[in-house]
Amino acid sequence: MVTSNPWVTRESAAAEPVHPTTIEHIHVAQNVTVRPQPGAVAAPQQGLPVRTAAGARWWWLGCHGGAGVTSLTGAVPGGTDAGRYWPVPASGPVQRVVLVARTHASGLEAAQLAARQWASGVLPGVDLLGLVVVADAPGRLPGPLRDLLRLVEGGVPRTWAVPWEDSWRLAAPSAESVSRPVGRMARDLLSLTDPGVSR
Image (cartoon, rainbow, N blue to C red):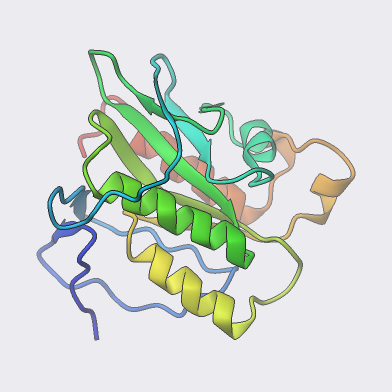
């Protein structure tokens, strides 16, 4: 059963299917408009800092230290590290942002806080594309973390899951040697940020 989410407003002709959530799972909402809901979601007292920025196809925003932004920047060309700041435009086009967090409890809680900050409407000119959750260990997520991830997924437009990449421990990742889930995410992001594709 799909229930409405108080964090966001969704407009869709058909209900989204419910999928089981594991770290191998990638959920990308199709034909859905998701935007902040000012007044319905209270801004958190503490959140990620804000600064004016421009010039990136999209920004990787690490919700906490060690989220995996550096690895994603190497593996998926096109994004720019936001430096742990929300990139808000001074003027001109909106800034596209992808949140990044590890799948441990503190990482998912940091992602939830960032999603709340966006949903409250206090970030003018920010287009949140979604959240990338990067595995913090090999294997399946424990039940409590799967439940927390499901909750966090409900507050963002789409979620991509990057499984444990053992090769990333030995060398910096590159676009030429990425796993299938990372390749799919790269294609999604390039499509979402293509100026010729209306959203």
